[in-house]
Length: 440
Image 1 (cartoon, rainbow, N blue to C red):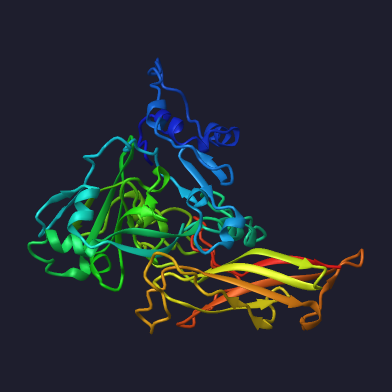
Image 2 (image 1 turned 90 degrees about the vertical axis):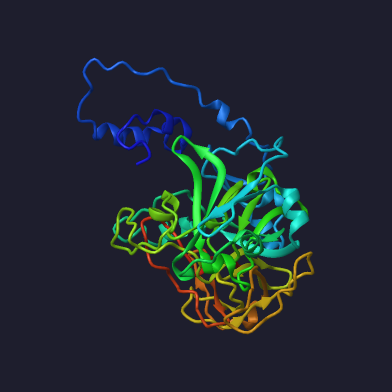
């Protein structure tokens, strides 16, 4: 699609996830011939565009090196604030070299706007600083679980990186509210705010252009949305992998809208036309097999929970669980229920851990629909085996196994489903998180 009828060489070199024998075999089967007297153009080195790639922590689970994509390790998912160096990385393009650009600024422009460009120092000097604790989750988190859930259903596959449960993380993000910056530049508000969008453009780019995404204007400017132009993560300058020097933080919204390396904010009458807005990151129905721009873009994420530790403690003769639970749109988590018979019955609610004190504004429970619960909840359970009502499965060697699952319920009573609907892109999967636990 990116090559659009031209040569694929530059894309092949850029997105090396496709560079394997299986893909070449597929392409060979679609060969219809060779161009007569074709003389290949010399291959231009693309190494320079990867020159700013930073050093990454060893603990990350790497899915792809160029562009870099890696998920948060399971142990780090058990912390309320994800360590910066272990926060999952979703890269669409090479990391741009912006470290030695003190003049770098974000241009705020568009219809009804007096265009102005703000450096980090301009933002700090001209606007009130705010810190929000926000969970960011990739739309493809738990894609491998969806693939496994539908593996027996006509061998349905999914397209995308093989995220397990670690394409998610929580951080304290510091910056200024986007609504304040837009208000400072606005000459005239949109005549129909409900139809307008605010488009973000990143300084990262490939041969087709810059990364772009958009959110509705009413979301960008709402006092209940807390959208940030951020310059700090967990109290320090943004690291390169997370958008240095500026990025958008859109609480409660799918990760792709949280544009990194933010260089342009545009108020416009229409939704962004980029591939990430029109052809991808949509909740495609199960019968679709290719992108279709007619479906609405994903914004708010559904209720989600994932086991991050599940084991038998022989000394206590108890099953011990840890998990995270999260819902998009700022909704709170009402409870997380536990089953020990593969989800056929749920016996009790796990404990929602109190939110620790951070540098951000307090996220006390508030009334729906303006709860502004932007961060996940950490969940624990420690259950003596004698208190479990479900009967274990007994294996041939006599080992007893509990088929343990969890499901989360939001404050507006959305219940996590046993199995989420299939889509070919493997997006928005939020079925039960389950693990077999052997008891001796």
